[in-house]
Image (tube, rainbow, N blue to C red; front, side):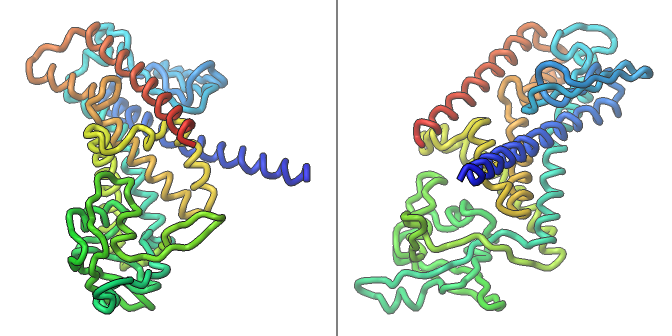
Length: 374
């Protein structure tokens, strides 16, 4: 019994370490994007660090005086440009470089995250196929017009490829295809069953009045899917499987899939601002590590998918015009470029400092709400 407990604990620790490693790689890749662009544009770089906190390892280049370091806390990293945070106006300082050069350096970090995420999506798609939804069972309609609903219905083993002519990558794609439609309306689906692709007209069994992206149950209910019991709980009888497309279609789908992930982020942010989605549906660093550890250890496919998802998230999030993030710094560079005069450096520094503090507080808050919810 003790051996089993120890094995379970070690498996949990291993999965958490794997999740932290994924986050660390993504953040390091982000900072490496800044570094490469900075070197190409001849910016002076003082230090490239993996992690935060006290230094565990340090090496200084005799040629450039750049410091490479590995630090204690593996949940971050940075590429420190000369005068970037201090605001010093020396000839080599970050703020003394042309605004367009700074914009390129700032955008390079998120771009590198996206490139890596796209690469992982391509690897996963070619190796295993594209993730799609497979119908397990369909519930028999009770009441009037039961025969009509039975005729216009999905069938067991159907793999959903398209809805209304648009490829389905995520459950939010289904929500977009069905939103606003009423019970009794027909929607055309392209499905694969037994290796054959066919089109089915599906009569909706419920109104599709979705208010947020978290209402996935309404989607499966409207499509008439059955339910199954697992571990004493009821789940919709639908599963994620992998489907192989041709070479060019796989490449195109991979680009589109990355774009849909990015679009989902904006959709969720919009739902948060409108109040259609509560803060308890979000997650901070602790929640992210927890979910990543659960998914990354399931299979190689899951590992690639969650790593790619995190990469796209980091790319999009860092480009948002929120103080302390790259997107906000780009805005300040654009203001300087357009008006030929920068916002006072001290004011900009205060804005970014306040923004960074608020981001940290928000991350802690959503993790607490997740803990309370559980």
